[in-house]
Image (cartoon, rainbow, N blue to C red; front, top):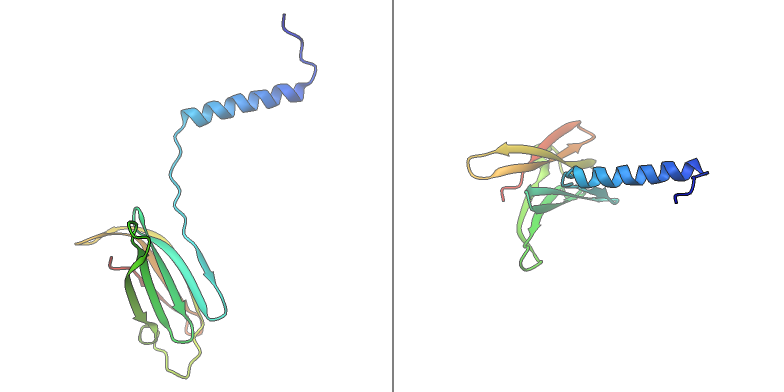
Length: 138
């Protein structure tokens, strides 16, 4: 014989658990892909997906204006395919200027003649107000 429930909170908790588990089993989730950006005094680092399953890492040296990019080989676990771009010309900077950069990656779905692009790296120089977008030719 069933006993009468005298605590309505327990009924609502049980109902919520049953509905939540049912929804989790019925609806399929979407895969999540995250990117990250961080900085220290003179450096900034960002990540973004070069392909659906390969991530790029970017490092920007504020003092030299050098932008470095690389990807990790999934078989060896080592970085490979290093790319470098000097940003002074892109932003019209002179050696005496002290640039102030920020950068972040963004999602992009574009097909080029050779390889689809899944992300773009945005770099801004705050003193000039200029913005540039870069893609990794992987």
